[in-house]
Amino acid sequence: MKIFCDTNIITEYLEKRLLFDAVAKILTLASTSHSLFLSEGGFYTITFLVDKQLRRMSIYNPERLVQERKILLRILDTFQISSASRFGLKQGVEDENFRDLEDSYQYQAAINCGADILLTINVKDFVGVSDNKRIKIMTPQSFVDEFLSNTPS
Image 1: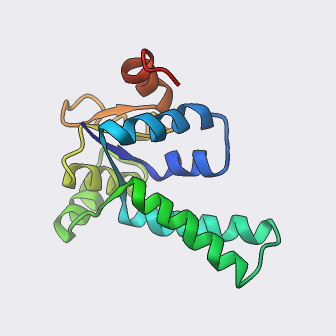
Image 2: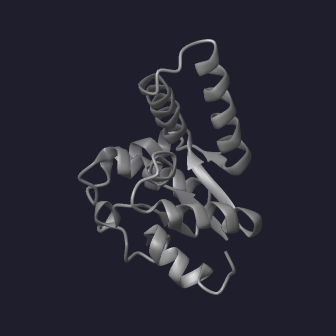
């Protein structure tokens, strides 16, 4: 199964937010038996957020860059990167199902990699496409409940 993760999934994990446990379980268990994808644009955003978090923790160069590279390489070891082509981006701009174009680009990147599931914290952002049967839109917890609930932690 191909699982595309919206940028907010990784943010949830890195910042240890409310759904951290569900996301951690997905990253641990799903990554061994499924293909995980992240958008190229999402990776840029994550790079910015990791750098910002390390600065907030008063970690400065050269140590900050060492830690940042370590974190980002771990992400690249876990995820395949998907991008939306020029055509996909144009589709995203024109798709009136979305109120937020960034979500539309994420959706196009998910289509481009052939994702079966798009994981997001904000399912409501994908409501216009959630019933199209092309890609199943799920929260981390609904994914855990449906696919990983019988898997030992």
